[in-house]
Each structure stands twice: as structure tokens, then as C-alpha cells.
Image (tube, rainbow, N blue to C red; front, top):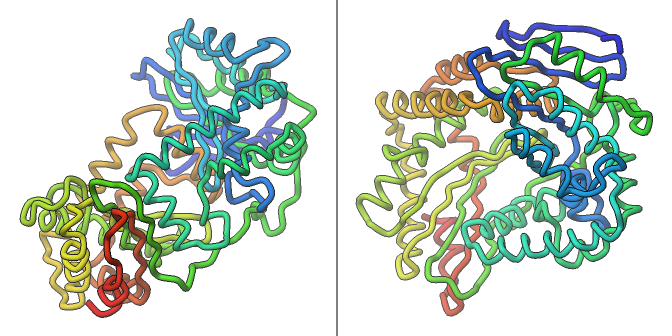
Length: 437
């Protein structure tokens, strides 16, 4: 197999190679690593699902391990990988799906052959699919029984109502029942095309060995290419809901809630300022909200903030689990703390701590081959460019105090509240709290 082109990234250790079948290979050699991670990723996730096949991207991720002609069942696949000292897994997000193996570097070639066989030749045996439906239903029930996870489903339903972002990636119990082998194969046909695939290889494997192995084993005539309009993926676009409160009542010993604001899509330069602002509010021990709710009030074990960054939309969210009897007090405290930024009360030391906290977490994330492989694949799939660790740190360093206030003044215009409350909790004051505090 020939290559169409090759580019070095801003980091000279990272190379992008476009194969003649349009698959992109991202390679990064780390000579000091005892492992190599191989990840095959597709620009297809739950945002590519129509209303009649909810959960199919995640279902496909599970059933890709069903077996091949060469390896008739998933027990054989798992046994082979583990006998080589490796581990295998997969993940589905709203926008991508990834299949990966982390393996001692000396077993790289065999591991790549196994992963390629699974990805390209899975048989999706109908009896296996029926068994896996039960597994996924139990996964969904587990999430519903876990308030820290269930609150995110509720918050997505609130913010992104009536779009794929507004529903659980796993679908519903009912939608899983209606998935068929034919629907799985159609989803592959419509989304798993060659120019929608990135292979990332990170670890103690050289460029030539990586390229030779990929060209030898990643060959299949069943996956075609597709011309994309303006280079876009065929995901279903989202918009923010006009509703601002969503409540779920159940038997819980703690109130869980997410207060959120409209943010920015990934790739928007304002995202760096939003991340620093998020870190000031709820990133780490020194964050304002951690100090307020946990160290001063003693009402929460966990409170933090973060951002969601999709290709066309995003948000800032503050997440907490608090004493049921002090929920409203906690909510008011959070809103007042966030609102106090209008008084331009961010100190220089707050900014320094937040930036260093973010950069430290980034450095820690980039210490493992699996995190790096996942990051490189996601960058290339969603943006067709790869930022290095130094690129990310430099962008964080450039955030100014003026940009923090600009972002705050922008996002404060819309506020949302999703909460899971005990059955008998009064909610009559919530609208007044979030709109007039």
C-alpha cells in the first residue's frame, strides 16, 4: 500500500501519514515506554443516530467483539490479547468510537493483526447480539442507579433537548430491544468509511514498523470512502434548549445537581479562557467552590466544574452532591459565587493557580500511551490537526484576565439547572433562585 502524503506536526515526534485508501495513521514513538497503544477510531458516535436507532453506536462498539472467521468468539480474542500481556477495550462518545489495545511493545505486530481482524471482519452473530442486549440493558440500569452518572443524563436532556446530544449515549431499554443485525450493518455502511478512520500508534514502535504493519493487516474491500460536503461529518446538529430547569425525584440520600451555562464548541479560541474560568471556580482543592461548599460549609463531598466541547456547541457545568436539607442554600451559594465575577474579583493568584493546575493535569494525561493515542485520534478526526502538549500549554498561558471577564459576561446570559432530589422535596423556589439570585 502506498501513501498519499506525510506531515510532521508541531511536535517533531508526531507524524501523520495518509494511506492510499484514505485511512490516516498518526504515529508517535516513545523509546522509553515498555508499551505501545494501538487505537482505531471512527468519526461516528451517538450524534450520528436517528430517532429509530438510538444507542446503536454504543451497541456496535460492544458487538464489534463478537468474533470473526479466524477467531469465532470474543473469548478467543480476549484470551489471545491477554496471553500477550495486553488489554483491550473500546469507547463510544457523542462524536467518535474507538477500539484499542495496550500491549508490551514486543508484541505490537500480533496485537495489531488481532485488532484489525476484529474491526474489519466481525461477524455480528445474531445470537451474540441478543446476549449483548442484556449486557447493555444492565449497563443502563447501573447508570440509572448511580446518581453521579444519572445527573449527567438529566443535564444533557435539559440542555440539548430533542437532539442526539440530549439523550444517553447508550440509548434506552426500549431502543436496545429494537436493534437488529441489519441495523448494525447499515450503521457501519453509512458511517464506518475509510476516510472517516484514524489509526493512532503511540509507544516504543518505529515509524517504518508501524507503517508496514498497518499496510499489511488493515486491508478490507467492504469499507469504502465517501465524499463529505465541505469536509463535514454527517452528525445531527444540536441547539440549546429554551427550558432552564429539569427535575427528577427519586429515593436518594443526597441531592445531586448540575448548574450549567452555554459555552463554546471545541476549536473556538475562547475555550481556553472558559477552561481557566472553570478551573478557578471548580478545578481542584484551591477552587472557589470547593473551598466554599466543602471546606467552609461542609455540605458536599464532591463539587467541581468542567466543560463539554462538541464540534458545534459546548457548555460550562458545575456539578455537586450536597446535603438534602441544604440544597437550596448550596445552590444560592454557587450562583452568588459565580455572579461575584461581575465585580471583577478574580485575583492574579487565582489565575496562576488555575493555569498551573490545568497544565499539570495535561502533563499527567500525556504520560501514558493510551491517553496520547486517544487524544491524537480525537484531534485528527474532529479537527484534522493535532495540538501538541506544548501547544495546549502555550494557549492556556496566553489567557488574559480581560478574556476571562469577556467570557463570563457572555456565558452568564443563560443558566440551566438539572437536579435529582428526594421524593418529597419542594421545588417551588428553584425558578426564582436561578433567575433572581
